[in-house]
Image (cartoon, rainbow, N blue to C red):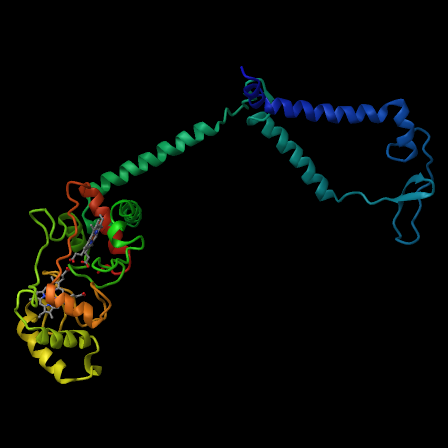
Length: 342
Ligand code: HEC
Ligand code: HEC
């Protein structure tokens, strides 16, 4: 065995030996004839024939003295409180009990094992197997439960949410951001504005089949490129963009000639997908226009004109086949819990 291994294996013993050596050393040293006299003189250890005076009342404090007398210096008799003594004795009894029951004393190759044969590793293994059993049980229940049943069961719901959060970190934050608040072209999953629906079932389906993905069941739709394909002139696009930009203002919108022209263009070309009042349509993934939440840009004219001219077609991969159905359920529960679930 290398010396260093020996030291680390035997560190308990080494510390104990050093402790007792120092302790005994001091005691022996104190009673060496040459030192004893010295310490007695200083009153640090009692000596035979130490001068004792009668116990008396101290004038200043009114407390009795012990009768010890060091060159005229006397000691007040102030014993430690009874409760303190009891706690002290209990602590000693506790310590002795602990030594007997639990691993305590360093011995070669480790330490005394204690009557209970307690062992951290055993405890850990037990806890781990308990956790694994709970996990297995919960996973089995997620497998056989509907989304609604999972949501109604508080423990199972928390379990699914935690599982979903972990999978989300691994697979989704590249596009949706670490807080799931999205970015340009990537929807915010924390708010209550949904392109394809915010019910548990909707979210589950979106994750499973994806959007304009390679899955045969994918959610899909395509807005026409009104500018690029010459359906509307640039001037018409400018007008309808102004109308869209002001839609969320409702009655407060400033009515300009362009706004009025845009309103008609909107009614003729856009309401099929975006709804009569710009309410959007979740069956088509057509965003709501009468709120101030934007998938592309921040509601500035340039972004809106670009959306109408070229049209976007955001792609979200399908996760079926890549993640298990149970995991997709957990993800749906998690995304739904982020704040905007309906
Ligand atoms: C490659 C980028 C990308 C990744 C990775 C991705 N998403 Fe998406 N996700 C999108 C885009 C883009 C949209 C919006 C598509 C559109 O324009 O309709 C979207 C939309 C969604 C929606 C619908 C939001 C709504 O308003 O209806 C949900 C729910 C969603 N994603 C969840 C997830 C989850 C969960 C994961 C991880 C398993 C994930 N996404 C991973 C790009 C991604
Ligand atoms: C066939 C259905 C359809 C029609 C018709 C349609 N849109 Fe869209 N529109 C969509 C879809 C779907 C999206 C979302 C694209 C995406 O998610 O990538 C969208 C997105 C937009 C956006 C971006 C919204 C945002 O939050 O950034 C604007 C602006 C817009 N449409 C305006 C219009 C206007 C103006 C018209 C009429 C001239 C129109 N659309 C006609 C389906 C349509």
